[in-house]
Picture (cartoon, rainbow, N blue to C red):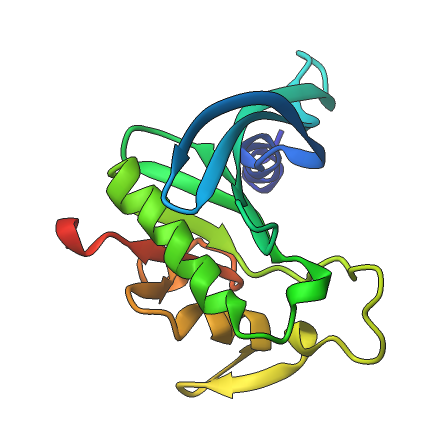
Length: 188
């Protein structure tokens, strides 16, 4: 196997698992401020080396599903280590979209991650979102915009405008262009 092929294999094996569904259990972990945190499981596949070739296999991993007690928004967290959490997804409910709740959701994400759990950083990506049922016309999140001299989606710009948010590529050169970090100011 030549060096380029070997590097491709390495890259494939390092890919994060592909998630196909997230299931919430009825088990409440805790209630904090205006949210309830539930146990959940993300179901997907991961790449592995069979000894002859790269294949994929089912992979389930624990997550926490955080829901606003008024049903306005929710987000899913995957603990990567004692210091790092992955924000897998987040959304404002369809009936509450367009009412300025995104900033309140971000505030809740940061509060849970930084104050309740004391994580040092949140890792996430502003990938092209799945189209929510009920959205008509062009989705603002997918529009390409300029921000600080860079072209990006409006969704990524939204995240980078939040306090303590940074393009991950500015910290890790091999990061994907749509990945970002939110750093806990306590550990800067």
